[in-house]
Length: 171
Length: 286
Image 1 (cartoon, rainbow over the protein chains, first blue to last red):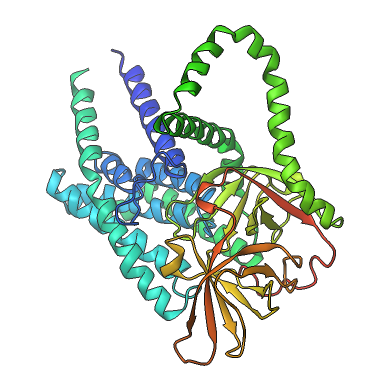
Image 2: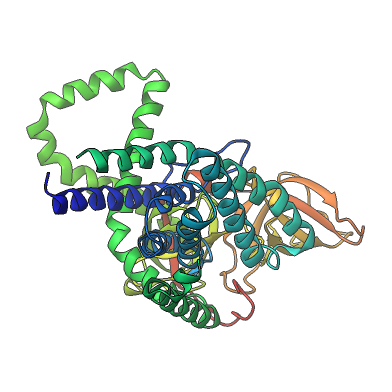
């Protein structure tokens, strides 16, 4: 297969998967909740993507999917776009300098990113509007459990991108 | 890592970041407007989100009909497949009839409140991360919708428009603590404030705060808007389910179940105009 066509096919696949997950996140299709705790599947998807891509590609993937989220998420102006841009860049740089590209590293990075996302969301949108008691309850009952649950979804996305990387070499 | 901070990639990422922060700061100061990039993306993705929501609703209807054991309905569906030609002819008629049914429910509210002007809207996405069940509708400023417009169903109050874009708007519900609205007990005229609470929002309920200790509110009473603030007077909010003392024992609160089933909403009405609108907007939805 010509190299350019291969690149186009993989890029198209990435655009489709990011677009689909961003859209489905705000429908009832992907309303994955355990004991009332939700998930944001885009974070582990972005982590898995950024492990094998350049900082710029990861930042662009993060900013575009963040913009789709911002158009649906409550209260956010550019929150998702900014945070996902930073997370994508961090993962890409960290995976080439601090971590190995293996599953344990992916789990650790996914957990760090999920905690950063949910705690910053809590700090910006829920600490003041909900009062001290409600704000703390929100952090402990919603934000932190959501971060842990979200981080666990790294498994399917890690193996998906590992498979794609293998495929890139084969074709 | 030092090489990354000196690279061209880093400069591009930093420029995007600065631009996003600038937009974010400007729009959080202006308030109540969806940011331009989210507006553009929202407008582009709105048809996809409507489609996804429509597919989900269709599947949900099908599954619930199947789960209810409605055998006749399934047989009817098979027969309907054979009558495709007729159905095509009738499609427009059915759509009009469904719209008429939807509008008929609001006729009584419109008759009782001739000053109200309505715009119908369909829910296109839900914020599943928000425990207060905020959502996005397919109408925006191009359809005459403004920030702080009340959102209702035929059952009662749903919330208000917290951010408005060109073709979409975000709705904050009565379950959210961001909303504080003056309310009355319909039977006793005792007044208080409706505002959300995290603990009870999970079960789709909201709180009726600041009721005087001498008030006569009772379980089963209806709560309506008092007309102070951004909502017109007399909109049904919900029914009192429980009554308790606040933690300082200075006032009473009641737990209210909204009449509008927010978790199951598909269509809503926005009150775009009413007498006295815009008199009091300060401090709402910030």
